[in-house]
Length: 103
Image 1: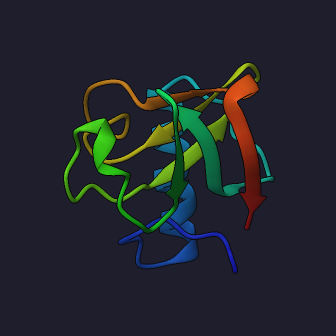
Image 2: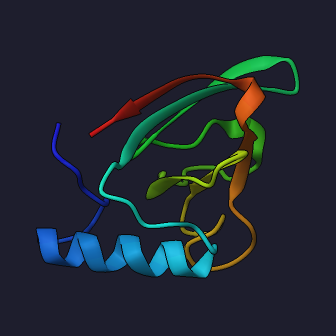
């Protein structure tokens, strides 16, 4: 699967949106892009995948994951209302992460 950002109409636009979200949440931009993150959240295994809805346990119904950033000790999962436009992203602590897949 090639890197994409949901609703971006071109690769240039995807890069621009990705970079803007990274800046907004103070995350590094790297050439290695995360497509899927799996981790334990409050005792349950959850999965966030770019282009798919964030699990409902995060209180963001029908929000699609736009980007996932590796920030060292934590990962930041961004949806429109959790990181991209307002509020804070969903945070997954590295020790609780069981799987990371890349584009």
